[in-house]
Image (cartoon, rainbow over all chains, first blue to last red; front, side, top):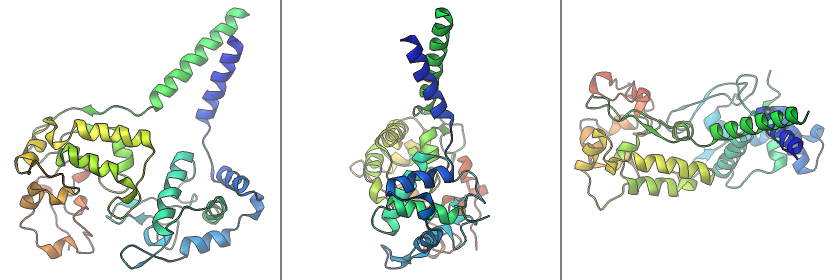
Amino acid sequence: MIKRIAWAGLMLLSAHASADSPANFMARYAQQAGVAVTALSPTRGEALYRSEHPGKNGAMQSCASCHTANPKQAGQTRVGKRIEPLAPAANPARFTDAAKVEKWFRRNCTDVLARECSAQEKGDFIAFLNKFK
Amino acid sequence: MNYLLRGIGVLAAVGTFSLLAFSLPSGGEARGDSGGDDLMPRLAHKNWQQECASCHLAYSPALLPRASWRRVMGGLEQHFGENASLDPATQADILRFLEANAADSGTSRMGDKVMQRMDRNTAPLRITETTWFVKKHDEVPRATWTRKSVGSAANCAACHRQAEKGVFDEDTVRIPK
């Protein structure tokens, strides 16, 4: 019994300590979408990143509107606050925290696309950003 | 052997407990006012700083009454045109902090000043709609707010160069061209 509790505790500790990586997210989203990781497409990810959609104020908007045309560059929120670069090559903190990644996909997909993104789209998106060196 | 296992069990339990305790939302730590007339109360609260300040300056809770903060936090899916939704636990944690330090909480001089000019029956959604804010900025021409270098009145730090530190007095104001 005690042994079991000890193991459960240790498992919890290790789960807490392990940080996520872009590759982990790609694997997870591919699995959720029911495709192989190799089926994720940076090209489709880039198309999603640059696709323009009608915004609330009538102007067209895309991911690039705030994150800039180059994901290795810092962007800016609508009220002028700096957004650290999206590409892991320029910002190693990207795609290392599952709660944060899901929070921002949920918020930004509904803002830009007026719907949530699919697991396939999320995987493609990270595949695109992970391509930058 | 049994003692060894028991030892590991205790260590793991303590470790897990402390990890959980430290990763739970932290309570606000009000340290009250620290003097200056245009100084925001010095406050520290992990979720408020992390979540609110990822898009804009973490506006001081002392700038709006409790009823306003309840409206703001109750409508994060449509937060001034953007989806700023949070998980329910974080949302509740931030609201508790905002209410505890709100303008009408009686915890800061800044809050008292905001309330002096506030119609008690209103709960403005924007800090810029409070009479206090309007009076404080009545010498700033309308066109200045929409300058590209400023963007909007939500961007305190465009002119209040030490806004991140909670310093808002006139000596630190530089209006960009």
